[in-house]
Image (cartoon, rainbow, N blue to C red; front, side, top):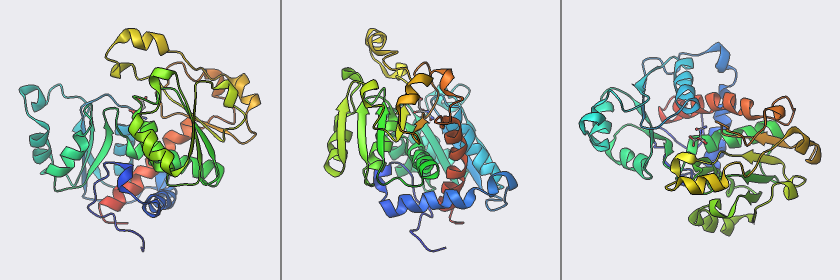
Length: 308
Ligand code: NCD
């Protein structure tokens, strides 16, 4: 298949990819759709290792599901308890060991830069499944895929990111990725959770960005309402968290004020920022978003393992 080559590549940051490459990954996710239920033996005999040093439900299970759907095998750990990390093994050694057992490594780690470091030590492809508050590139790709699938296009959209834009890694990766498209970004957060400066600086060079503290004021403008959880675990001072938790809460009634085709997205897990009464609204797409994570990761695994 023609297109940019991904075989053997690391997926550490969305900033490492051009728009053409991102579009190619999204195209591959679409190709994977029919295989989601039917399955395939495309990755038969291949092994993926998941090294998760931090909590996860969706990311780890969707990678495992994607690998299994394509006929491959998954192994790994979901917490460091019971692994040699408890004995003091460092990340570089863990990576150089596990790469002997697998063809691709999927890593989640609380430290920023951990995935980049793992990629430097590993000779097999490394996929960043979340590096501290820094980035979560595969989430950004599945978010783009969801926008394209639900709204038919990414160019031309006004996308609101709401909540914790400081510690939320999904919004960092998503903002970088969206800066390759012709979109407008509305960054809505309490003052202390404003978008990370380095992301804001880079992204606002390329696209129109507006910051605000009010969700209600901007409901009418958004095509995508991307809600996020306040990342309690990243606060050094829990009193600060107490001040901003519950800053935004989207309720079903708010949706009567939005564009007819607007969609509500959330990387999940949610705490209280999206009321359960939104779930039955046709605007709510966060569970579809979860499903899109599987096809996206099927495509990505196929690409980095060189079979697509
Ligand atoms: C996100 C994460 O881990 O960054 N979860 C996910 O992977 N879908 C978002 C979050 O934890 O709030």
